[in-house]
Image (cartoon, rainbow, N blue to C red):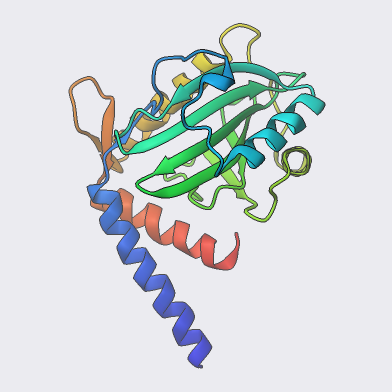
Amino acid sequence: MQQLLFVVGTFVFFGVLGTLVGIWERRIVWPYSEPLSLDLMQDEYRTAANQGFVDATLQGMQQDGFSLLCRFQDARRAKYKLSYIFFISPDRATLAMLGYGNMVGIQIKGITLISKNSDGHYYYTTNSSGAERYDVSGSSDTQVATSVRDFSTLYAKHQKWLLRKTTPSAFPSDGALQEYRKFLTNRCDLRQSHGLIRYSDSEKNEWRYTLLGSLKFSFIGTFRGIFGL
């Protein structure tokens, strides 16, 4: 009985906390800066705290035949000192994003794999604990594997999951990131049409969850996080 009360209490606490944060937090449709130099040695956010993880991930990507596409920095807040490097698989069916740096004093490092099918539904596999576990628009699914730190192992897990879920569709040979950006834009428009978010500017670049959207995002995401779904 005590264990059940603890689980319920944890669910309610983090659900309410997540709802409040969701309403308050300003988000950006495309949260990345203008493209930066592909010379990774020039990256100021590559430090001793993440060097080992970054080097091991880059080596794994190279072994699996991934090609470097672009490097960005976080465009949301000045305190988010984060770098994002995008790669693409040999069959162009999977984008890989390596993210690392410092966010308000917290060291961040993780990998996100991104695929889609011919219907435009997206599939994410990530080892980042801060990833969104639930898409309120229903236009993507996310598999979270925080215990998997090796790139090749995470990529194999992603491919195995995809085979169970769908038939992946390749990104275009020219403009893979442009297509991904279009998906993020369309997803926000869909969320707005359902009353789940509201744009904060006339350019439809910044947005926040509405109360309905934040409740849905937070409580379903918390439920999935607690039960490992």
